[in-house]
Length: 534
Image (cartoon, rainbow, N blue to C red):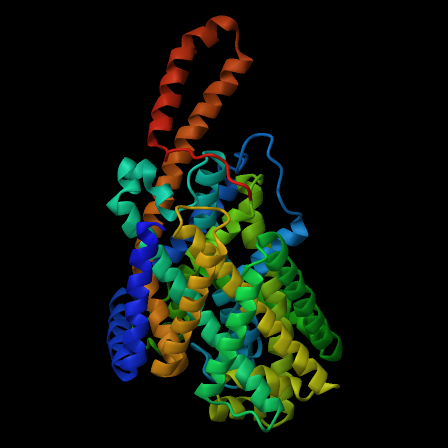
């Protein structure tokens, strides 16, 4: 066991005990810190996520795109289908199902600027929903995952967040600074995954309660759901990434596409496609305004704090988990292929998903006199999907499929999370032991339970925003470190190409300079380790 394991475990355990014994105090403290960060540093979240978008675009179109994440002869470990299944499952998971109907409908009644319950509000609601689930989150994942994959597979560094800091702080990344960096990553990961587990538990409970009168929608039921899912994902964790997580990811894709096609075929298909194209156009056209909008002159920050800042914090908090997992399954791809794959494909899928469920939710809600929104206000946002599905043919079967999909996402996210936490706390082992994964599985479940006990969904959201703040600062330095390393290696590759193309006399003159460049670059890299079995 490493120092990171014991330090991280101690800190999170103290939080769990605190939350279990003094839930109201936890909610109070979280509220104070959350309000301070939202009001004083909201601009920071907006700027830093925008920086990740700009960096992702640079990596796609810049000079480093052909550099491979691995040795020159390495081939991708997984097919495109499996790779995209991993991305989709790890990157969005439960949230995509949770907010598919909920978010567009909520924005329709409380839009950022349009008149509520109008055509303009519907159009703006779809635009902002895609904004929250579009290029910004996936660019955040991409830059962190790329940094880890680059140092791990190209330079055989340990699969740790701290490894990426070697070009900036040298050997200190292996000492106290490295322990602090990896501990912060673990802390952000625990709260990021716990937030999603809490969302998943509340939605599963809502679905069961909405469908079966005998099941109450209470905190106790939520905790029972968390317990059952914990047992399932810990069983899955014993099978490893190439069986448990892979098969669950395939299952998620099949169930999600099947549910989406079912709604698409039964609903206003043409209008959904038109919404997809219109929303994509509005999103691209208004991206700068949405990206930098802080409402500095109006002072109206409710929508910004409740939605955009929460989402940006959520994606940053999820990035060490998702980024580490994506890096783990991306050996052998070029930088350009990697960034395009991690950003473009999930964004297009998310846009179509929300177009289908958003339009279907609008139409059903309107036809039934606003019943879905009324139920959301009375019973919580988590019932929106099930209230909508209740109106479909074979509703019980369809709701059962939806609950199964949420459960599968829940299990996969938690399984992947224990895998990543195991890597981060065992010195970067690509296949951490079952015992370590079991410990983190229990910790994730306990953290989600304590946050629900302390204040429900609001406590989950507050904890996420707070945990993401220090890690966002680390991510800035990770990006600087990556660019520094890429610039040095690109210079070496250019020199090597010139040597191959020119005559022997030129090669002899440049040989000493090339050796100097290689030596200087190697000194900035983390120590290489022996390849472990993936």
